[in-house]
Image (cartoon, rainbow, N blue to C red; front, top):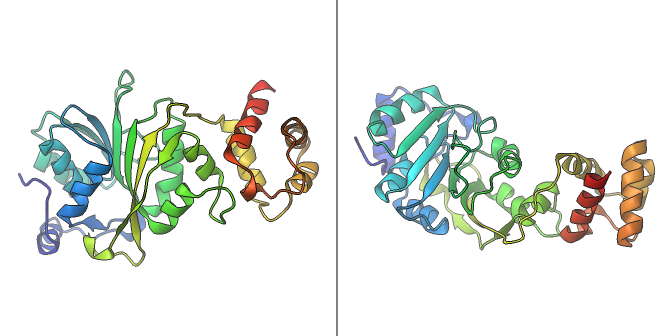
Length: 280
């Protein structure tokens, strides 16, 4: 068994032995920098008593570090060949619970329903970052800390504030549940193969007043932001009947100016929309 800490050459050799070529559509860029591994655990404030959900363990770089720290790890890996490798390499460790599944379908990696005190460490492919995060926020159990490796574009969107072009429904939902800490830039040289885009580590700390939006509200927010260049009053008047009634009630009750555009509206006002939807 190795501890998951691999250099680029060791990663290349292991992939050769496994007869596995990194799958681009699965975002298989394997972490090969021990400093970034340590930073990932540091940002999530992982200690030996923690329960940690890991998404996309790949070759086990973060898995090994988490297990060495004494954490109990629940990991979800979609790739069958990598899943089998992880089982053979770490399977004897009683602190590892590993499932072969899509992380969007199983965002908490089979974490037992009675466990509410946990953290998440994840190296997320861009294609699933938003639906996976939405699934976590909708799971009914929020991790107290998250350390997410993301493509830069996704990290900026998650951390965006109103008034920014990156501001979106996921920015609102995440920001109303978590305090977004300072992001950490990660060089492409920290991965094998090197990705064509920049990456960032994003640390998230659960807010004491964390708010989770109703699924109907999120659907309505997505419809509103699909017309983000229009004014909110125009969007409200031209929406489908029920949506229009809800949005117009929101504008009136919150004294929200009809000439505002969605990306300029402050997050607390979106909470007001959620309250109206839940009461309707």
